[in-house]
Image (cartoon, rainbow, N blue to C red):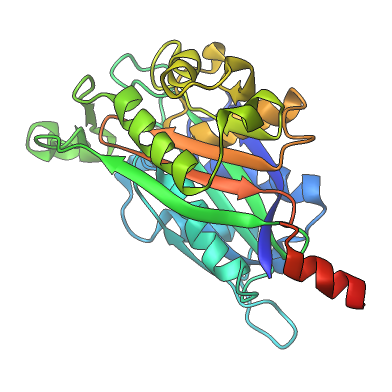
Length: 308
């Protein structure tokens, strides 16, 4: 058993600044696109970092699970479901893909839904002190034997002195639920991305020629202007094989990998791809993970097919 991506969606609706609502809308869109009922989902993972009112408990994943009506009742014949937060900054979705694959790949869960995105805790949009674009995103995974699934995850990190985002409760006083300070410019996402990506390409046996022919595609986030072109140049890949994010979107932060995936799909880059490299990076860390939409054909599998 392995894992396949069956749908993905993003929501940047301007009528709300609530991450809970934006992520839930994206989740509903992903389920509807795949024609999968919520009761078939066995796992919900939230990778979004900044949320309404700085809520810490209960887990945001549980709140979104409730909004999506996933596994709210345990009864005979119903799929048992659970949810949890997996917070790792801008690389959370990539780590969540690996975590979900551990369940779907073993056949323990038929469908897993990952949600991500961020908003200022005040839910006010367009704040100058918040560098990320408010929005939600979702990606739906399915247990299957027809896909190659995911490889291992490759990461790089840099020590950063002190937090890069925090709520200063002492100065906020009674307005702590709306308080947030984000410190930027403390690390080099491009260098971290290059390090993780080089390790991934070497470890997974991918060479530039596969990207040149369209057999492999790189999904690059956009924490810096020109990130897509610059990361392609650094690792020797054609920029035409790298899908980025529309600059008008801004920086979706934790939702960036989903935006890049949909961008690649919209351009037809995934139609013939045998390897899709998810890359995510922020000022603290980077992560790369290969997804293979098609099952790998080996001598053993060919002999099994011939026997059948």
